[in-house]
Length: 397
Image (cartoon, rainbow, N blue to C red; front, side):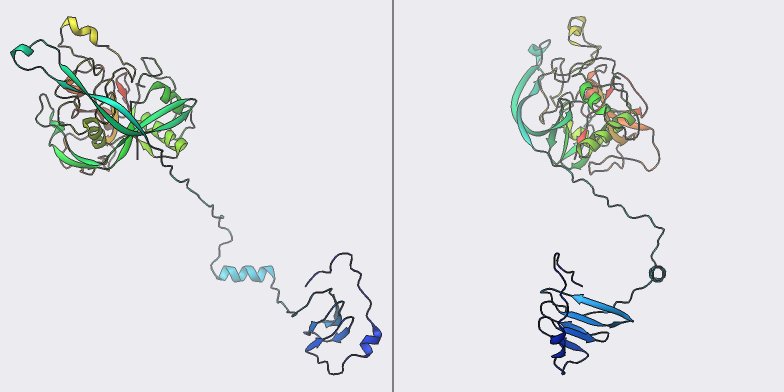
């Protein structure tokens, strides 16, 4: 029912007009002009002009309707049910009044990184051959290339550079390399989807920035490395702590960060090469941080016997990745298997249904000889193992 406008005085019915009302008015519908008085029974529909007054009986209760330039079309009787009756009806339809209200879950959309380009020089090592090459230093040839990447802001001025790795196929494992282990066979073809991987192993500065973020599953020690330095790789990291780092980073950035699969790691390390190292058949102390116990005393000065900053060496591989040979062993997602027999060929992590306490580590370290730093070299480590030779880098898809 329309409400009366404010400051509108209800007018008294005009008796003279009432006496002149048309006798043809019915009990069902009454139309009148201004200032008419209509008397009728219940269920009457009244339409009037300005200041129409309707008086009638409705369940022994008088109803006065006063309108000003409003038209009342119909008066509808509504049947009002009791609360108890309504509740019984809903219960019969299967409504559970004790159920908790559903909470609307809105997943944040995954953010797509903004790609950049950077130019770099990669190195190719050529070992001197022939009689006159004996005792000579290897030749290092450099070539220019370009890669795509994006920068992840970890807060406080700390950044994480992620290099784009294109999809492709490669042969994973050893090709009858010298000192290759049985775990590197059989060599098999693997298809890998595109992904992003860290330009460097995770540094101590990056570790600290993420370690201060809210805990997901387990606490992290902020300062855990033996060899200190913001740009040094974080080490003494067990597998579970590396996973926790990825979980916290994912929550902060709204991107899916994780450890690389073993296939992704080797694919990124090789960067299209089939030689023992992405540099070629050999590596030199000018290109990587490793230890060569068989070297002469005169050349031992080149070896650091500890970690070095991640930007210590000039040349990355053909994809723009640094320290894939030596520096620190890097954790992978995969459970350890003694060989590649029945290994997946889709590039995903090879994980058993049963619990496995052993994981794959890749790349060698500052304490390893060159054979352990090859692209195909792989070792196992317990998930709780920690050492100043153990670090990791992250992947984002």
